[in-house]
Amino acid sequence: MKQGRLEIVGLGISIPRHTTMFTESLIRSADRVFHHVTHPVAQEYMDQLNPNNHSLHRHYTEQEDRPRAYHAMADEVVSAVAAGERVVMALYGHPRVFAVVPKFCIEQLQELALPVTMHPGIGADACIYADLNLDPAEPGICHVEASQFLFYKLEPMLQCHLVLWQVSIAGDTTFTTIQRSQKEERQRLVDKLRRWYPADHPVCLYEAGITALHKGRQEWIELKDLAEAHLNPWTTAVLRPCKGLEVDEEFLDPATLQS
Image (cartoon, rainbow, N blue to C red; front, side):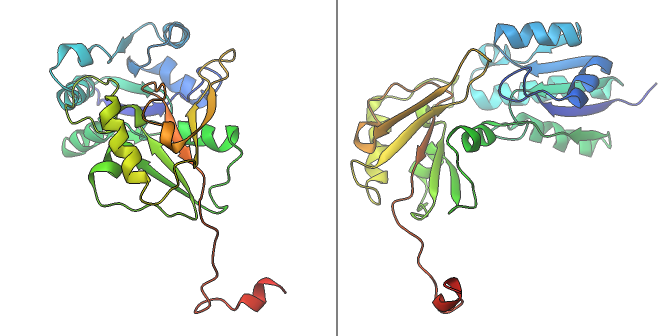
């Protein structure tokens, strides 16, 4: 019996524009492909690369909540690898950015001493840098999941951009299929952000373009309007810095910056 193996690949956000030739070659040569794409263009693309492809998306409706759905996805993939198949799991974006199923797969396959490799892809964070003309080094960027920011004692670095992921479900504790949170729950996020940011602080509601014809979304609003804004499950909120950088004279002589 041949040994199975798993290749985890990222298809990019705009499929197939972001998908590399290397990723395509892995998909074509696989015995079986599991994927998590829902757009018709992406599905047709997967069918062309390898007809033996299977969507993992159905687990959202077959299981009672998101954690069970994620484990069911991982179990299906690992079972195929354990049966000796060369498997590819193809996810949109980067396969480890806000994706827990690859983590479960890697942990299980490592326990079984079966080979698994993850390959990066263009994620929504890379699209943010390009579309909003942001350099993560100037002056810096902090990425946080919106509900995590709300529920835990986290403080933003006010000198840096703040990127809040999954802002549409901020405050949701049901862990059911992904849906929008209620206005009251999102208002709690706004109230917490108001500890540091003024009510009129600019916030970009960002959505990456998923096809060549879809230009995405870059809508600037004021923080006070965030709770009532139209938010999709893939909407990301980007807050500009509200403080400038200050030199720490204990470690850097200000005179050196002028030389």
